[in-house]
Amino acid sequence: MYKVATFLVSHFWGNPSDMADGLGVLLLTWNQAFYRYGIFDFNNLEQCISENLERIERFRNRDILSLLKSDEQDIKNLFEKFLKALQIDSGKMQGRKSPVAVAKALHLLSPTFFPLWDDRIARAYGCYYSANPAEQYVSFSKITKNIAEKIKTYINRTDKTLIKLIDQYNYSKYTQEWI
Image 1 (cartoon, rainbow, N blue to C red):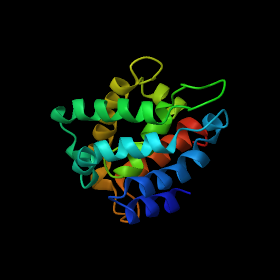
Image 2: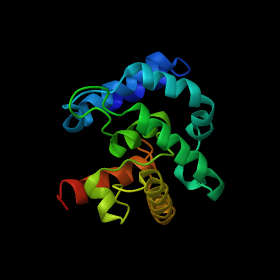
Image 3: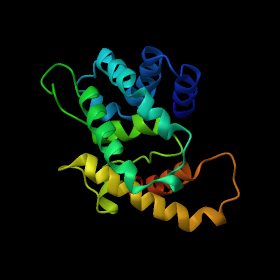
Image 4: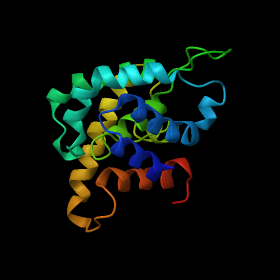
């Protein structure tokens, strides 16, 4: 699903409706545990993408190593806007929000800049998101940048980005506890 969603977002870049569909492919599969209670409103997601496309584009061609203090407010703003756009739209869980879904969406929109996380990964790095999720995501991004700086010289793979390699490590260690 990751490859399909990445392709769809890239292929339809600049068309918020189709970009929202591409994000939906990943979110409704990778985040199905959350969205089984109801889904987000695709129109709200499309509007969020449309209103923030210029800001998203500024991050799209950057990697995590270029994260600056001056980026923090933009990241927080994007996170908050996507948190609202991706909330459950109807049913008993209407209004419930997923910081995990936001990280996945931002990552697909800028796969070399925005890191992925889940509950266990966020806790492992001391960035649990039950309060101030946007602030916690910025903290997690800074930690990820520090890790990327330390490992970049040891990586000679070109098929995966530093962000994706770090995510695969985090997922293997903290989410699945394979290592």
